[in-house]
Image (cartoon, rainbow, N blue to C red; front, side, top):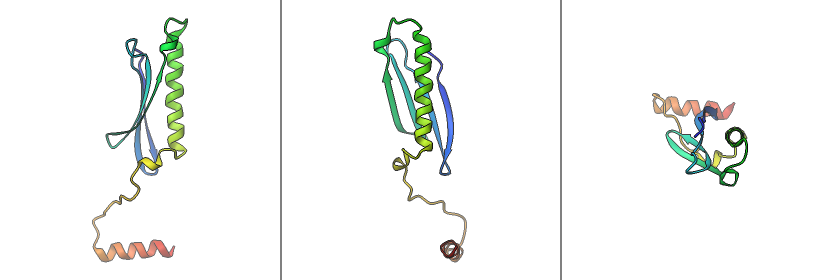
Length: 110
């Protein structure tokens, strides 16, 4: 098993955690997971069973892991996973109803 990658990415004011790991000799798979608020939004798995016994296998797996990790980060930054988020959530601040209405009206008039 090869040590993987962990990266936190901020996108549209949300934090996503991307984790890529080698599942090991008994499960020859590179897995990349995207977490948001502790939940898995996406899982990508690529088998390398066909490469077992080939020279430089360890280096090839590292390259697969890096490519998978970087591709998911690029896809995230490119907005490919935005449909997985509930964009109708709002942060409710400690304001009176009048203050919230006035803030909303001010935003619309800008």
